[in-house]
Length: 256
Image (tube, helix red, strand yellow):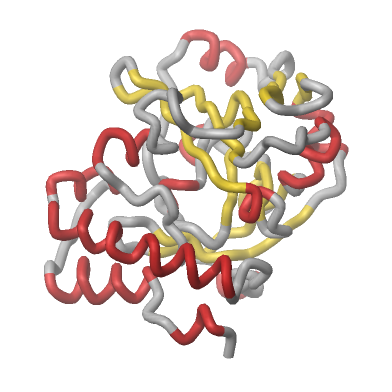
């Protein structure tokens, strides 16, 4: 058993705190925003899990499942649709003219069409998605490893964080998320364009979503439009590394 497996996991905290003590039955991850006790639960676990995974389990893999384990129903977390007019035009055309921008601290900024991402070496993995709300579901995801895309762009030495800029918004605020280089280069961190052997539908983040399998669902950014390599998160929106982190005090590191 690894050192990280010996501690109480964040998944265990979710079940014991949110489900056992609170008995919360909610319809969306954002419904937990008003629960100060739940936010404190996540925040108290953040440092413990970050240190434990970095010291003992930085290369550990999230559990992968068999096709027989696929959930008969997989709920969509976060936004289910994007109202932006440019996105809706791209969706209607099957994202034929869409490109993923990769920039920031890279040697070679990229604008990759979906076909280029589909032509890269692919990783398929069947994993469990854990929402902060307390529900889980098992699904199959396919796409290129993020590390491969970053290799093509050529990261500059000072790059320490990868930021995902998304098409969806909450009011006037764009959704975004970020991870560090350890998770960015992890083999199970992929840019998924397929789910359960079908092209990713809108409610699950079409045309592209992040799968960072060792973290909670709100870190799995949907509707990814741009990937930016940065030295620091300072000065980026609220400065805490993600929409929910800025607006609701969610933990930046959501390891499970």
